[in-house]
Image (cartoon, rainbow, N blue to C red; front, side):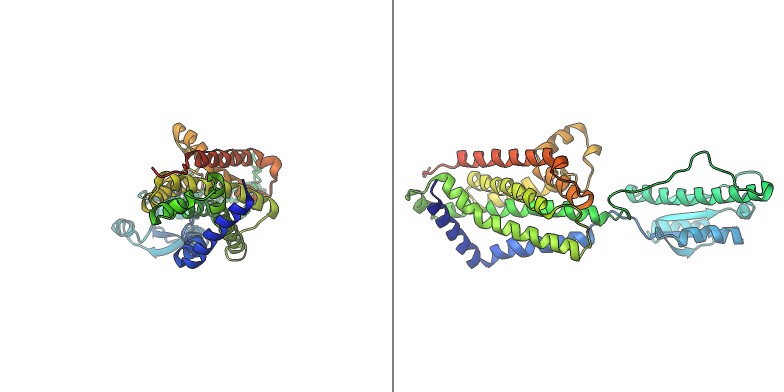
Length: 377
């Protein structure tokens, strides 16, 4: 392999990118657009759940109980209703996701000698949000019931009862449990996967379609030199995208970066090597810009979003899909970036993912070289 030839091919591809505004927009502006769009639009937090209340008791106790909900950041009281039909209408129209129905005897909770039944109605059409909202509601009810028991004990014995178990919860790595802190690092991995493979999927196919591949074939240029030379400009674009993504994640979305920056850069280089080689392989096999771009989007976008663990936990997937995820390189980069960003862990923890990324890159690179034929068929 002669570096002079590699440099000449890289310069040719660089000039093409500079002169083609669409390539520049695709390579630099599109990742930022995706990062901002998904960073703001995609959230897994369930806050301000709209709530309606039918308070049949209308006592200080019931108002205190409702205040526990309206004072929480998880619920937003949108309406007090006066009958059951109003509750149904609010949920049918999606004005409310959850409804509280307090009985007439709610004010006697803790003094009547029997449990007071509270009805909580949840719109289950969005099962994930409904499950989380129901958990919030159950926790508030449980705490309110515990406060009643403590107050009763104090009245009767003068002391508060000691619970048999005293839980001291502590959340590591994401203290406020903000979903954006986990989404943005995963989003960087997905965007790099899609953009890197998509851009390089057009390179070889474009040479075939414009007829310039015949000229390249007539030169002493060898296949590995052509592939490496065409990868280098996109490698630089990928690094610029990474730098911009890290800056936006830190200063726009306020995502903490607890790990080492050099490790993040090293892992990104390893990942880019595989993702760009995958796009090159698709371009060599496709020989058509349209077919290559379509296949690149299908082969990278859907697996990166659905099977990388970025949105859906891999552990919750069926067993055969869990096995399939091992051939998705974005899976390893999502784990690596979340580990570096949130946990601040190093290579001693992430070496397995790094090794698999390297194996993927080497395998795809060898396949691309083997599939490229320097002859006209």
